[in-house]
Length: 300
Length: 260
Image (cartoon, rainbow over all chains, first blue to last red; front, side, top):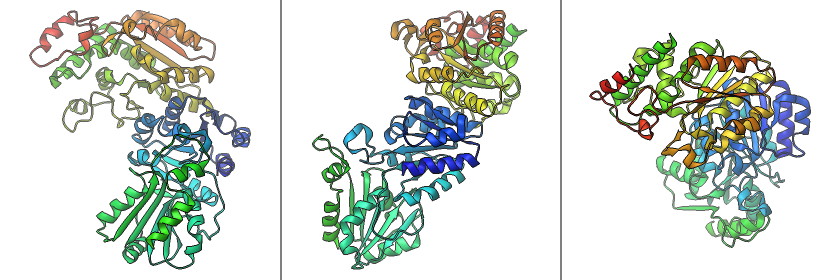
C-alpha cells in the first residue's frame, strides 16, 4: 500500500499544487519520485513529529493541503495533542498517514505497533478515518481525502491478495452472503479472516462485511443482515475500547436491533513480551486465521 | 504616545481581570508581555503579517490590543470570561485572521508559525512576516526546539520570535527549574539572529525591531525581551504571586492607582 500511496500522491501533487508532503524521516523507496517531481513541496521534517504535525496545521492555515507521514504510532499517539488542538479543533486540511496499522510492523515490536489509533482519533471532531482492506482501495480513498477539506487519517498496512471478489470501494462492503452469522471486519485483517473461513464461506452461512471508513452510517442492508442472523461477530486488529466493535454495538443498541449473540475479536496486547512477525502477535491475541476459523465455525 | 497607550491597555486588562473575580486571567504574564504585543501589533506589523500568541495564557493582553485595533468589538470583548462568551483564558479558534491558532498548551505556536512561513516560502510570498510570542518558561518544551531547528534549517527569515523573558514560569523562577532556556547562546546555536533588549522600553523595542529588519542573511530572528512579571503593578512587580492574585471590583482601584 505504501508504494501505491507514494505513486498516487505524486500524481495528485503534480496536478494539485496545494499538496505538500511532510515525512517524519520515513519513506525510503517511497518518495524519491515525489521529491523529484514536486521539489519544495516534499519536506523531510526530521525526527520531530510534534513540530511536523503543527507545521502541517500552519501550512493548511494558508490554504495548502498538508499530508504528514510516519509510522502510525508516531503520527497518532505521540502527537495526539497536536492533532487535537492544532488540526482537528481547527478543522485543518491535514491528512495523517500512519504506516503499519495494528501489528503490521511485527518484529520491530510494540513501540512500532498501533492498537489504539482508531479509538483515539474517533474521539476527536471533524476527522475521517480510513483503514483500507486491499491495495485497490488506496486510490479511491486518497481521492476522498483530497475531496474532503478537513482532517483525515489513513491507516496503511501491507497489501496482500485476497482470493475472493472485492466490490469497488465503499465505506462498508458486503463480501459474501449468508444467513447464520454477520461478520464485520475492520480493514486489512480481512485477509486473515477470509483465509481462515474460506472453506465455509461458500456454504451461504456467513454474511461477511468489511468496514474501511469510520465513522460511518450503518446501511439498511447491514441492518437487514443483523436482523436476519441475530448473530453478530466483529473482528479488528485494534483494542476493544473505541474501535469498530464498540461502534457497532452502540449502533445496534441505539437502532434497537435485537440480536442473540455478540462476539468481539480484538487485540488484547502483549502476553509474553516475546517478539515475532505479525502472525505471532495475531496468534497471541486470538486473531490469527486458525483462531478466527475456530471461533466463527463454532458460532455458525 | 506609546506609554499612554500602554497605560490605558494595562488598565483595560486589570478591569477585565477584575470582572472575573478570580485568579485565572494570569495578570502577571499579561503585564509582562503587553508592551511587546503593543509594539508588534501597532508599530511593526504590516497588512498581511501574522501574529501568534504561543503563550496563550496571556490572552488578555492580546484581546485588549485587538480590541483597540478594532478587530474585536467592545461588545464581543465584554463577553470575556462569561458563560457562553467568545473569549476565555486561552484564545479561541473563532478569529482566525487575527488569532491564527487557539493556543494554551505551550510549545505549539512556533511550529504553527513555521508552517505559515514555509508555505509562504513555497508559494514565493516573500513580503509577509510571522511574529510569534513565546515565553522563557515555554522554552522548556522540546517542541520549541524542534520548531527552532526547522525554522533555521529552512531559512524561514520571515519568522520573528519574541521571547517574553520575565524569569518566571508556572510556580518558580526559571533559574530554579531548568535554567535559562531562553539564553542568547542557545538561540544563536540554533541558527537564529539574536537581539536582546528591555521589553518594556518602546525606544529599545523599536530599535531592536529595526536591527532585525536590517539582518541581511536568510535566518529567522529572535528578540529576547527582558521583562518583569506583573509590570506596572508596583506592589507585586517581579513577584511569583503577580500571576496568581485575585482581582475583583473591590481591590481593582488600588492596583489601578499603581499604574499611574
